[in-house]
Image 1 (cartoon, rainbow, N blue to C red):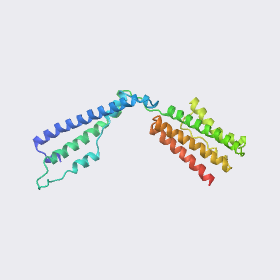
Image 2: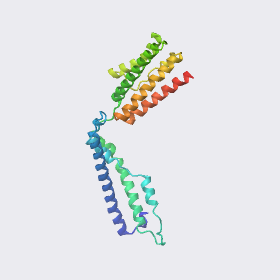
Image 3: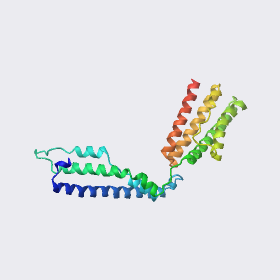
Image 4: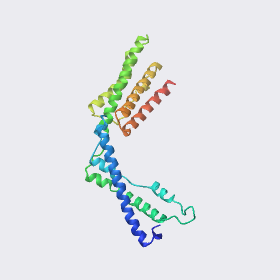
Length: 247
């Protein structure tokens, strides 16, 4: 590709490559800083804490180009409609290839740059614990509502069964408040102890309450998907385990 270029074209390719790389970096930086700036203006509790400055600089620098850019360049036809060689095709291919190589090399500098800017390592433990505490509260509210409905319908749950359902969520709430245990710690399922269909259906309803609260936090409060997705998967697994027992 580069070998097919004339000496003057190689010089032009180097100049164009530098211009394209600079344009890409500047354009991405303007977009990222504008996006983060607008995000900081929102009233969402999570979005208000969106990082700016050093973190935005890292996002702006992470703009590597890959195979898609190369494929776009190679899609240029060999000849024009009249059969003449497509003008400057080799030059365009060479510039695209050089831009890809340079941006991929620059991507390897993200680690050293982050260390130089002293970017803190993300630790979502506290946020996950906070969210799990809110989910536990939603489940306990749903439990209290259902227990009252059962009593009014003349089919109350025994105190022992109600306590079995309540205990797990209260433990989660306590962990969220104290933050003394890891938020990643698995909670022993209490559903294995449940035998009554009414109890299992209520447990499913509590999981639904947690799912609704988590989706609300994601859609309304801007909870990051990196936190919401694992928690949703955990809730889905818990729901499926309960449904299998009901069946």
